[in-house]
Amino acid sequence: MPGTLIVSPHLDDALLSASQVAMSASSAVVATLFAGPPPAEVELSEWDLLTGATSSIERYHERLAEDLRANEVVGARAVHLSFPEDQFREGLPDAAGCTAELAALLSEADTVWIPAGVGGHPDHLLARDLALAALPDDARPAVGFYGDFPYITSYGWPSWATGKPSPAYLDAAAWLDVELQKIGLGEDCLTRELVTLTDAERRLKSETVAEYRSQLAGLRLDDAWIGTRPDALHYEVRWTPTAEALSRLVRQSRERLLGREQN
Image (tube, rainbow, N blue to C red):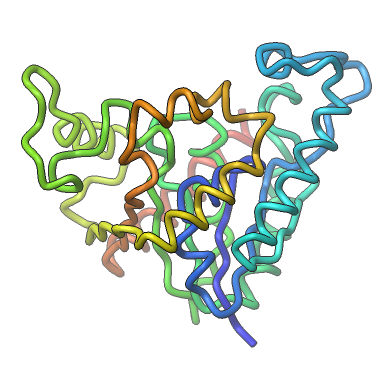
């Protein structure tokens, strides 16, 4: 039976950013694009060193297990694709292979959620391009973009989320508007949806986030940081594009991927 597909760049992004989608869908699949192992010659990456690992391959297997447990919490099925993330590769992954694997998953979905790319992380933007490029030209599933957490809260939640005035000298809403324009998702072609998690959903999201224990301090999502941001897990943001905008975004993504291959 068709269900909901959530595309995740890394082993944590989807459920950090769109856990409410996963927990509310009757049948959700979380597909992590860049879930491949580090090459044998990589003993310890800079990120793994920062997060206290002693071996990148051991940390990789730890993160796979974390993601499986996190998906169990929300009742989603985890799918791990074999392409390595940017810290473990030189250049770009196999775009044709990525889009082929995504196309197979998309054929079984009636709704797909894709990272918006807020924050500009290259893997998030690449995952967005690959997912858009893999969409069929006809009979497309419903498509939406989720706000990448914690990057979307780099300056706190916007005032339109909290219902409170922006603090003096800091306008998170203005920053997010500019950020969306920079990553090619101007809100003039999108419909924004703010999701305020219920108490039960926040508890479930807290349990889900806690499963990614090896990454939380590096992402500043550990208990010490969350304690200073009591509303950190209160909201999720997503956008749906107009049909015209989606067609444009698909075309642009395919052109960017083709350009990368030719270069």
